[in-house]
Length: 105
Image 1 (cartoon, rainbow, N blue to C red):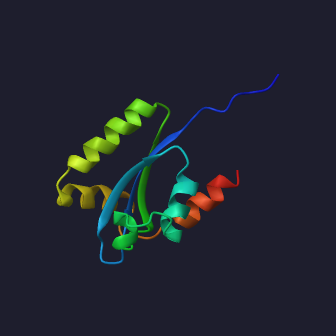
Image 2: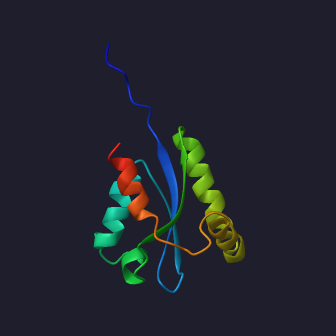
């Protein structure tokens, strides 16, 4: 009997070196961050401001919950976004290498 994989949805925050922030939603975190890093989004905010370092992410099993959370975070004032990031990633390290390892599982 073949097992079905549960669909996972991600809300993520990427940042530039100067800490410009971008909040997004995807069902493939590895692929999306890779796209941001390669600048696949012509004339897009993330490309224009070189926002490509993954500094925070969450996951959900419901697309609606993930979209609601994305919208909630987007409405936060900058200070609250920074607190959210720094609660889990004090040094604003790029978490992309971590999700590369997870994607291999």
